[in-house]
Image 1 (cartoon, rainbow, N blue to C red):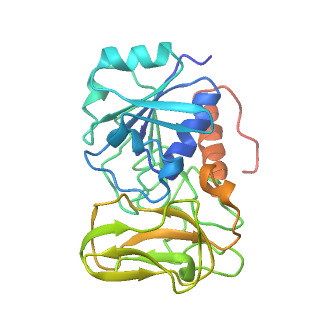
Image 2 (image 1 turned 90 degrees about the vertical axis):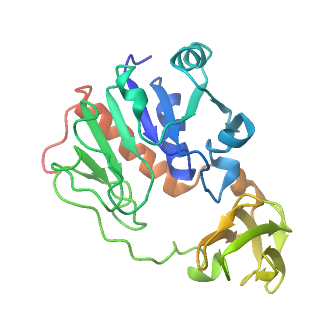
Length: 271
């Protein structure tokens, strides 16, 4: 069991993958969220606990907390606490050793080197050595999960990851601004052309056959063009309920960065 406390900004899919990895390795993990978080893959997002009070991903439980005492109680029970604190005010109350920005906002969200002895950001928007100590590459491909100790990650391509030759086709986007009504549950099979949701009165149709891997929370107000869902063409239902390969790769990079920066391991020469 490590004594260090790690704060993760965002309990979305990738932040959850990081939290799950670090919690499994014995770190005390605390997730900070906004008041009404938006996420697609709700079955693998600890942020779901903000709405439902509790969320479970691959055997690890996260619970919504509201105080320092509740945070400590959760840790004592082997549970990951998650709380609404977008401004990270809790950092003034607990002795945090690591802060991880997992918002994937593709812009600087205020995470900086003054927040903790070790600061890590995922993806574009931050410069390693200036804004934070380490940036982790999030772009799918050869460098996914790689540690960047000086400089920036690859730029956002705007192109979804390739699964079985499908990129943009597998993404569901809002046809207009408005409230979403979902017709299909995560894990259900869909066919090309099938209506899977409505944004106000406008239809959202599947572009390919597959399994609905994720969709934004029912009743959420979305913007035109916003990503609101994800269809997996592989059609394997179990993938909807487990952390993705991308999430595991990034989480592994975060773990490596923490162990190096806290002095548990020495960085290999030539990296």
